[in-house]
Image 1 (cartoon, rainbow, N blue to C red):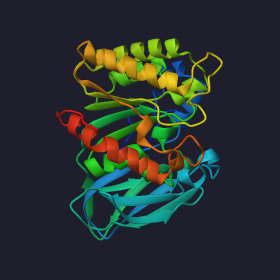
Image 2 (image 1 turned 30 degrees about the vertical axis):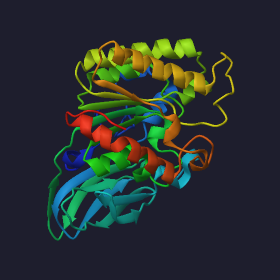
Image 3 (image 1 turned 180 degrees about the horizontal axis):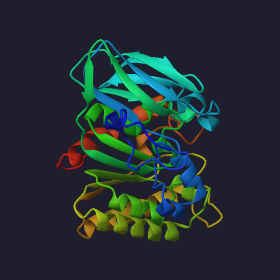
Image 4 (image 1 turned 90 degrees about the horizontal axis):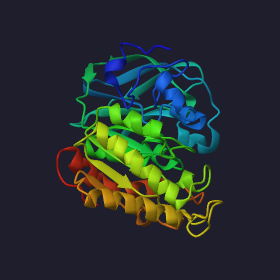
Length: 335
């Protein structure tokens, strides 16, 4: 599947070329990507965080597109059924999306910030053309590139729309070029993912996984720690000086004390995550920082007991955003 050369300069959040049936893949669509588990590749086929960014003055933009499905799965409408245009933190306009071929028209608004258009990612859109009405636009300058590896929490589950996911809030408000590598139901720290991160250019990398290592593919605390240590070593080998921010699993009330079949609770995995990250920094990796995910959200902000709602995603973004923005531009991390 090819991508429109007209749209390509405006496209952000996609680090790989199109693959068979997947215009905006979030893992390597070639033979290297086949080393990843099937559930990771399935999650990576959704264009989570893929967006358009432009500057210039015009009355409106029109986007010609095609969508493939209305089956949005667990996320429901939160997976995206509209194109949404923002400037900085301000939402300017949105447009409902049709199934199949369609045209979305969005007033462009005005302001010093670049315009950002989020896609109805759950409907699996392909963008054919982008037109400015009553003016002219050009691709926005790229901010520091941020590779955000994680699970369904990074992907944005239980946010009311794609723009509400915490990585997208941070990127929008701090001018970062985020590549969302959140893989719902997957992201267990597979070595193949570490190798992908290691070869992608970046000014910032964040790593935040663990809940799927408690239940979907259970790991013991020792196995989780050893795997995370190897994962970080591979990423660091590819990025000797790139800032890496590690965020341990957020609160999950049903898992905190309950042990999986390998006798690990989520609290055990969180402790292992934080110990490994702390040991690496103490051993001399001063471009690596870690944050405990436990206090980032409260139980009442988890409508399904696992994923944050809009207020929870906003809290995570407020806690992590300034520090991520600082280290992406050469400063020190602070949370």
